[in-house]
Figure 1 (cartoon, rainbow, N blue to C red):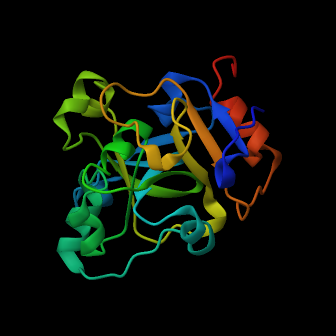
Figure 2 (figure 1 turned 90 degrees about the horizontal axis):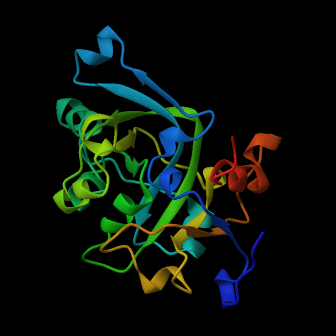
Length: 220
């Protein structure tokens, strides 16, 4: 594991496979399945379980303690519609309180922060399912990630993401800290990951060492 040099973010590891940090469906153990008939009747297309990224303006000292929470403000058909369709971390989605928006692509998550300083978190969502939908509102990203259009981009969860499922905060390796941004333009080729001290490894496959291996080019 590579160790960095700067304050709270000095203890980091590096995720090195550029394809996997932009498409976590490629990771071993990822589970993308078609929605059943009853779920399709409400607009659901697919479900996903695995690793995902989510952006938040909340800093690690808050998210590592509290997780990614939301206050429900919509219900019924309106909430269902927001959950089963592309959200891409939009402010409308989060402020609407429909759930927690995540994505399989770190670059997409970074673009959620276009109008504010924020952070991108890696989440181990292997033990629960989210509504998965293709597409992203940032059309500039299609040139980099064509797979988002016909495969899956967003994964929306109906429940909060508790802190023990948040692996840590990630940022482009050519930046010293997450606050320096670096998400715009071309996608980063590698990511730094500062580990959440409250992340719980329930098995060897959930360990930080295993996660680094999952996101490495020679994992297979």
